[in-house]
Length: 226
Image (tube, rainbow, N blue to C red; front, side, top):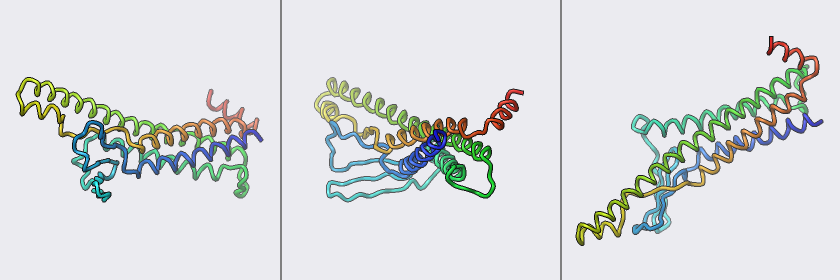
């Protein structure tokens, strides 16, 4: 009974994690413009993995997709690839775990086969969760690096403004014209989805030990260590 409950809990966590990763991948607000200290507030920009959106003061939102792949940075494409791999692995894990559920009867499938499918889906959930967490972390690292570089430029302009007269002082007070970006909600959704997938995979692996019949379990251990 405990193994069945663990299997069901792992399946539910995996399903929720996959849904969260899919939602995060499709969201447009991975990076949101930092409007603190920004003089120009008529336009608000946020970016996703597939589109860049601008919101005007009138409330009108215009989104433009990235029409090219070759011109995008390699790290950005790596984030896309990690999220897509996470979705694919998670979706396959969900399909396998559905067939492995004890409450679903599929012909004459033995308990040992269901246990092995449970372990397989758990491993796929773990891989999918790691991919999602890694993708969100790489993108977050890009935001932090860009934010720090833009802050440095703003301070540099301010220092030059103090020595360069009225024209330089005006530039220093206004700061840099390059917009700074902070973490968007999609990043946190991706992190949470990856963590839920990871936990679901661990729970499925724990359920495998209880679902595996004793004789098959000992035979599997013997094959692994011999």
